[in-house]
Amino acid sequence: MTNPRDRRARAATGDPETRNDPAGTTPLVERLVLLVFLSLIPIRAVLSETHGFESPSLLRGLEDAPPTAGPATTLVIISTIAAGTLALACSRLWRGGPRYRRTGAELGALLLVAAAVFSTVRAGQRHLALIGVLDFLGMIALMFSLRQLLTRRRYIRLALCVILAT
Image (cartoon, rainbow, N blue to C red; front, top):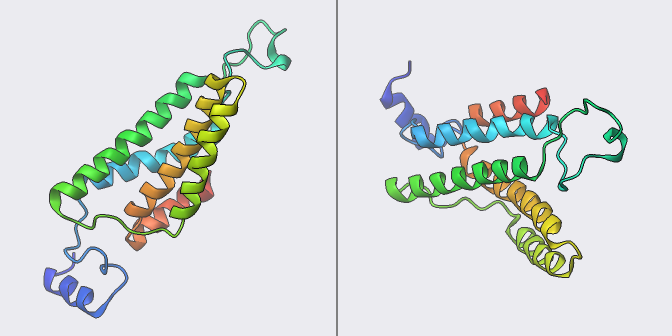
């Protein structure tokens, strides 16, 4: 265990381990949100999601067709991302911590949101288009939220381990 004075000295000298978190502590809410978000990465990789309500044509003739994740699963994952992002924002506002860290992808995300709105309005099956757009925009929200959470080296290493293991 390190001495708090050592942590402050490392923070003052610009040590990357403590530069963004001078006190050396991350709030429990942020750690839990990071845990949930990192657990969503492998779940998304192993789920075979379909945005429609019917089974794939290859599996229609089988009696015991393997279940696929339908739109309800997609909406649960998106709701989890939205709840975690909201909890992160409320935690940051409540404790007065860093408000927002720029990612450099804000302009591109704005362009994707505009394209998503346009494509949903012009789609023939708006319900399926809306599910697909929400799924895609949920991943963009996950990216922005993970950028806010991945501020320490150990968290970045943990995220890279999860991605490599997936």
